Length: 146
Image (tube, rainbow, N blue to C red; front, side, top):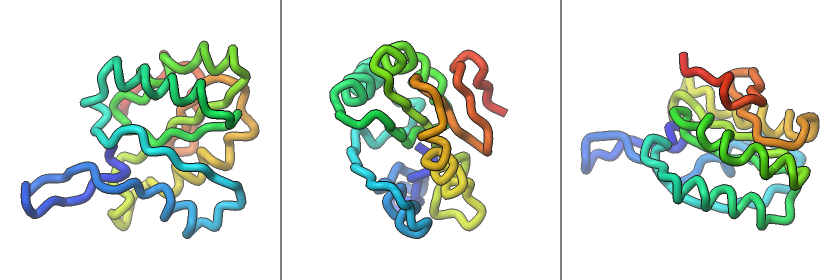
């Protein structure tokens, strides 16, 4: 999603680059043990039902009870809606976050949103939540893009 976008001189456009979350957590000196898994490198508008099914499957099969998903902002609510019921049943907490501006931009919201996601993770009920701009959305139907 936007958080990982970089400018490609070859195509004269922004493309999804390498994941930035490791660097964000390193700079923030995250005190948690974190296991990373890259699932897909797409703009969220390009995510398919099959991609979301794969995200659900990975969340179900991993042993962790707390999961952060870095996601494009346009369709966070769709992914949260697909994950919510299953994560409640499995007593897992999923937080989905991202950024309106790429992490590489000086005025990006990426570090704040990622930090918020990790900080709030242990305090949220099982389910799928979107954490963005200091807000927590636990009901995917309540998410609107402004």
